[in-house]
Amino acid sequence: MAVGEVSYTESDGACALMADNGMSMLPWQEAVLADWCANDPANRPSYTTCGLDVPRQNGKNAVIECYELYRLAVCGWHVLHTAHRVKTAKKSFNRLVRYFTSDEHPELQALVRQIRRTNGEEAIYLEGGGSIEFIARTNGSARGFDDIQLVVYDEAQELTDEQYDAISYTLAASSTGERQIVYTGTPPNEASPGTVFPRVRKAALAGGVGRICWSSWSTLKLPPEGASFEDVLDDVYAANPSMGYVLEEDYTASEFAGGSLLGFAHERLGWWSEEAGAKRAIPAKAWRESAIDAIG
Image (cartoon, rainbow, N blue to C red; front, side, top):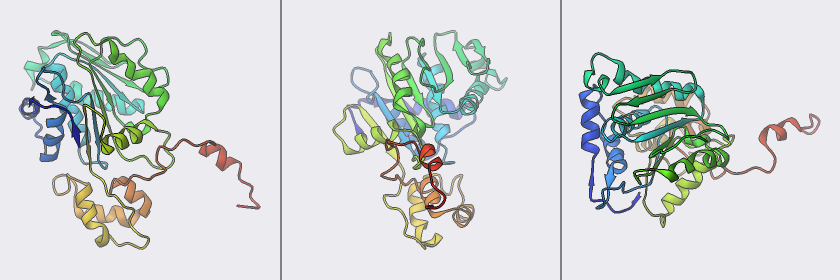
């Protein structure tokens, strides 16, 4: 789904940069990047809001990696990469920094002005002005970050309104006038505190929101109780664009056999519960702890 004016896309350049540095994009990843890299006739990003929800292990992080590398090294953007957990932000930093530190990529090494490895403050700064900073989200994170063109919300299913408010307004003072927010994640489960991801996704898929694109691989229905793996196999292929590339049918069958049907629906079929992201009047932890044993 995409709503915006497109004159051309720079995705071929982004994918070629990754291929030159040892990673080729899968067809579905190329399609997502074609939207994220699209520009309007005024040479601005066609979409100020981009979304991607796809089940785990399909290669979502490779799409982010390709896009950030291109915007950082080629476009000279200032990027803020946010994640729910410190270790996830650290992993994303380690994946990207290897391109700028490996002797196999001398042309990227030559661009580096500074690499900051302080835990919780990881960042890459380039001579041409591009930069990327990695943070774990808190209610006060990103206050003090200036002149950001791109905010990436990784693990967006955990993004709360308070965290969004603390981060997204960093885009307002972009010196180039280029502003973009990218949401990536998986469907939240019923215990997730995140409210932003399902709300933005719902608005995007409903239409009527300008300059927004959203790519979603998900089943529309929860499989019935007692369903077999063969019953859900068509949904497995429909919801997992990397099936047959990096995901295998035999292993997916073992995932189905070992877990609950609800868990498989969320994690492998990309099923969105109507309750996901709902605000609860009573926090789940408080509700559980108030149970009376005699009643159950």
